[in-house]
Length: 260
Length: 245
Image 1 (tube, each protein chain N blue to C red):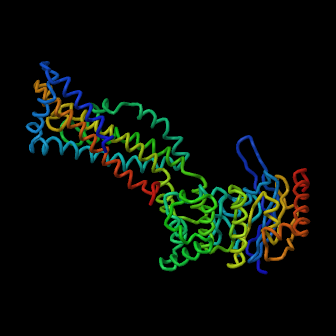
Image 2 (tube, chains in turn green, blue):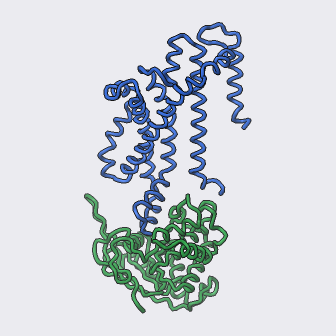
Image 3 (cartoon, rainbow over the protein chains, first blue to last red):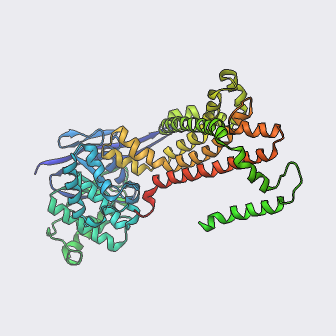
């Protein structure tokens, strides 16, 4: 498996006059093409810091990040981010279609190809009929679907997701989890999914990276050997799921206790 | 529509009734004022007083809008620039624009268009500028991050994120500036101008042409209503996305 994203000894220390906070101490991991990796950690584990560094929105203070072999110093072309705050990451004054289309236009994709990709992406997230609506006319779950459509239409090497389902209700959340699994399966994309939800990380991922408490290191890199076809009912009820869940849960407790 | 016109109708009715038997020189009956109106605002004063006044207002206002939004975006986007400019801005904002008229006149003269346009533009600038600064600062961080992560160019960020995001505040400033502009349009003509809507009202008053003076004031009020309606129309277009599409 070829490595798409490689994070090497990443460190981030916030410095302001009179105050130094070491958020991330030493993070090293690789993500292979087509993998679905979840990052889970106790609250305040520097998940957001990690994600912002990988997305190129913020420079690290040590180590390096490479996407497709190129060092990440600014937001790279091969990355798309789905933020937790879907309501704030969509352009409220643009229609759903235009929201999905605008990054493609900025990327220089010619109009006919752009149209086709927007149609495909909206279809993939089940929003073919809502193209002309404005985000405020949609429910929270649908708004996050728009953000997902925008990200997959961009055809990134890595899709970064920052607790994308933390702000929707439980039922919608289950739907969106299955949607993202299905998209990953169908499109063969690479997903790095940051969450604080242990069940979600086990249910979604092929691998779960458990972070220590801040200053962050990797506490465990756990393969999730559940069958590829997952289902909210049977998968979550399976003994293997429960065992993995317990394992991650224990790791998180140890992380909270300060183990690294 | 009936609801909108109800209060004005009542006010006119009350004025009409109260002033009906008036013999006061300064409070002529509304019927007299109404009769004077068409005779006062014929083609000649419309061409030589009203339209030039409106043209100066439009010019000054446009200059203020362009300068205010440009400077506001620059100042709002840069913390350094903001730190440098803010005290000075507060100082200039606190100066009532009419007191600048004599100063402006020193450089541009009382008569002619320049001093009037400068007065209007300077007065209208502050509400637009300061509101734009606040609006740009309040643009959502997540939206900015989104634009950055999708590698939007500077121009696209300006167009799709900064200007659209700051639009509600810019419009608020522009609305304040418009009413200020009308006031300044009149005031700028009260000092030594011989033509223009404001000058006409002053001349009527000085010549004791009281009904004519009142018609001038009514005309100003009507212009205000028309301008605000025009503004509302522009606002509706700009924020059409908020209502059902």
